[in-house]
Image (cartoon, rainbow, N blue to C red):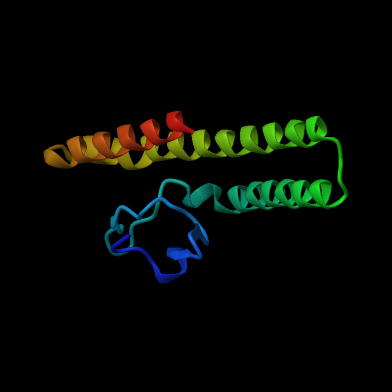
Length: 124
């Protein structure tokens, strides 16, 4: 897991945050990410999803019926998938479109990067 932030390394065989390694891509000075204009909405949405996950913990703690918990897992999963698709759309509209305007090898790199992100989403 070379190149990962120390907080992302395994602890006792489990990941503390995410198993995905960062791409190492940093925007140029003064550049913004595609989601920048929707950042507050995204954070609000992620806080709602975080609440759903905490709700799952409560359901398990309270010994709720398995199927009821699985229903909530499905809802949480769909919420995260929806968030991921929105973020991907913003990436395509902003980052990939910007690379297409600039032309050259950058467009190929951005398309490949987006394709790999889509492949990761489809594996989940």
